[in-house]
Length: 239
Image 1 (spheres, rainbow, N blue to C red):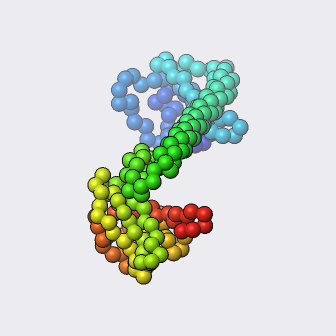
Image 2 (image 1 turned 45 degrees about the vertical axis):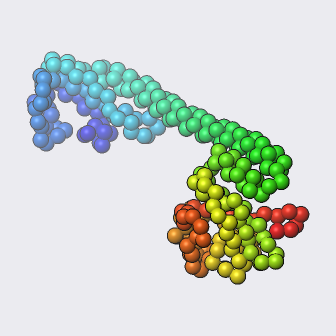
Image 3 (image 1 turned 120 degrees about the horizontal axis):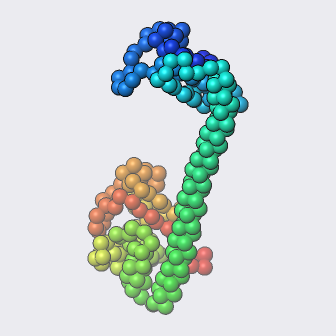
């Protein structure tokens, strides 16, 4: 520690007699034999301390000035080598991180591609069907391959009753009884989505419902979900 913090070398050839010049409280080694001669040098590169280098001997008067000079020369190359190793290690770490990023990006692209293919397949199937309830059933099965969708339905606007009607709504693979939301009921997500022509994305219904409605009502049928997505449906500018 003395060498590192003081940026000074130490050359000791009689340990017990000379150690007091560097540290005040000497404690004998916990294990093994006490060395007699020591060389310590700070490892520095571009004025940056990297650590220390040491050689030690159990013989008294083992080192001379030329030994210290040789260790100094060696320390220069050791410092360069350690710095290069550190740079290489950091570079390897960056390569690993970059590889991970590229892999994740590739997986996202593959998933997006597969999802797009699946959506295209779904669209072919449902556009060939003339029954709303059949469309809902087929879409429910397909959309669960894309995301968590325990509940799925389509609300169709009935201009005569001024309501959004949900035929064939599915929850946990069970077909629910027909229900509807009247547009006068402003505390329904479906009504808000329809009238504002905007999607709704909620991942915690108890915390986020008031972004869209004032009061959270119990569902007419089924359970209260924790997360919901609502999207307006248009057909040639007609809702």
